[in-house]
Image (cartoon, rainbow, N blue to C red; front, side, top):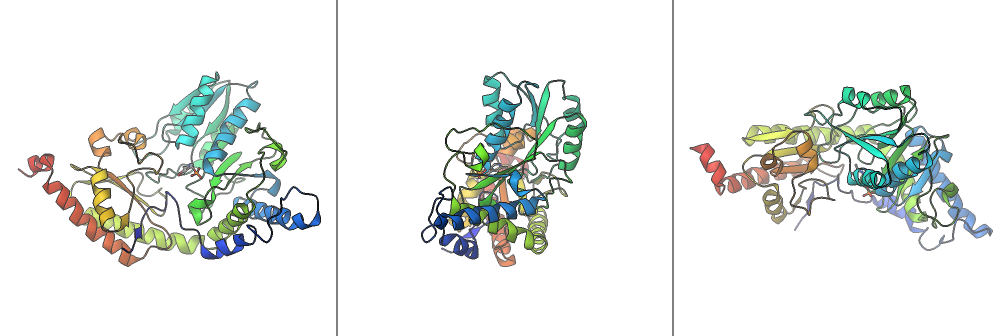
Length: 389
Ligand SMILES: Cc1ncc(COP(=O)(O)O)c(C=O)c1O
């Protein structure tokens, strides 16, 4: 069956031209970039070229970029690495209750180690409550970590404003930009960002490679012991093909940013308006305006998201009920509960994330199939029966 892929927030297809760039670093130029002989210089140079590409995309300096194994590792390194390196200044961290588990669980680990964490609330549209955030700052607050955009509901946070608040209080600011990079322009200088996490597989690069931006002068400890790679902040022989792929993918993402964003957001808006027109009792989750170009998260009342997902899957359509990390759990999404959805409505939610390869025909197929599937499930739902009486 022909697959219609609408789960680009979970991962994206590696671009063939990016793969081509990576290939020679698996075999022909397989050398260890840390070796001294001249054959390894090409591998070393390839990493440095990728570092410059990442830095250019963020308006950072190349020596502020550290390569990691992906978004989760970057988040762990930012939070724990910063907390342990700066614990003498204070042990209080502020984050939000809708962060990715890589942030929430890093905070839980830090709490076991004597740090205190405030998990700030969000408004109904998923935007961080700025007043509450500022009021939660204390004498011993050392770090604020707020994601640039949410992976489930797509809400884009006022990052520049949060960075400004942090800096006004002499606090460092980290943002998990894993969902934002490749979809939004992020300038670390202009947006007052001190640390930023990103991951290549979210913007048509390879899986298992990411980066952490750390502003010069921001102290972090390394989290894994070993050799001196990545200026002693991340030990382990570098994933050279992956890093080359990351560099090329981020450069390409920003070269085509406007073109892709326009196409993707038009398809997303079309999907949203058709769903609202053709399916009763739906609720769009997240902010209508400040949302990632490809994200549309709907709750369909009186039915279960899992059932919708399975019936769509039978028709070759890939969507998600939440984030890929929690989609195997039957608990309703904590993000949807945090924006105030009751359990039963949170349970009936489907995230569609449109990418650059999706077409209008595919979106039409998705909408038509969804209309059928929702109707079929509602016809079997005793709850819906009550409503129709
Ligand atoms: C917001 C956010 N942060 C972090 C991650 C983890 O990234 P990775 O899969 O590269 O470890 C994800 C992945 O879905 C994400 O959406």
